[in-house]
Amino acid sequence: MPTLTLYHNPLMEDASLLSTIFSFVSVFYGLLVPLLVLQAVALLFIPSLMKPGAQPSGVGAAIFSYLMESVGILLMTVGALPTVISVLAGVELSGTTYFTLLVLFAAGGLLFLWHDNRVREIEDASRAVPATIFMYMFKIMGFLIVFLWVLSLFTTLMQGIPTEQGWWILPLVMIVYGTLLTWCTHAETRSGTQSVFRSITTSSSSARKTKKAPLRKRASSSKGRKR
Image (cartoon, rainbow, N blue to C red; front, top):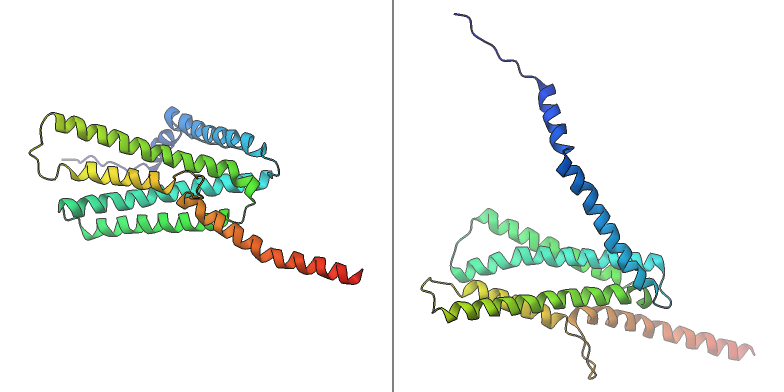
């Protein structure tokens, strides 16, 4: 009895792959996402350049650095929160999962510290507006996280204490995380306190100014001697 042999046609797979890549949805989001990012960056440029002394190159570098810092904070959050919740809940994850979460947290921390070091080298006028937007964005996020989870916890307790074991772990972790974000981005007050994120930058800039001050004094003293 003759058998039917099916031949593998790579052209059909290539055609299906190309049709998947260049489908309407892929092309739509492939064009929409860069345009939205470009529009957001342009909207950040407009108020930043209105600051006296701001330079376009410095503003662009500041926006890029703060965006990368935001990605770093997001990676650290993704790596830390599941680990803390699993430890408090007594749920054992696999070694591969723990290692993946550790890599994500380490990558986010390195990305944040790297770009935080780069943003210190930018002049104050160019990074003033992006830094303020960066601070208040995470301040709003922390406040909303605390408010929504406290409200969720309150409505849950209004219906009675749940019988499920460890029901309080996720709300508690999220409330602590939101409080941490809000505390790290608290605004400056008259007493001189400032946000934790901004204190790193201001301390480095003040250190550079103090180093440059003796040079100016020496230059002025040398001019007086020449006269």
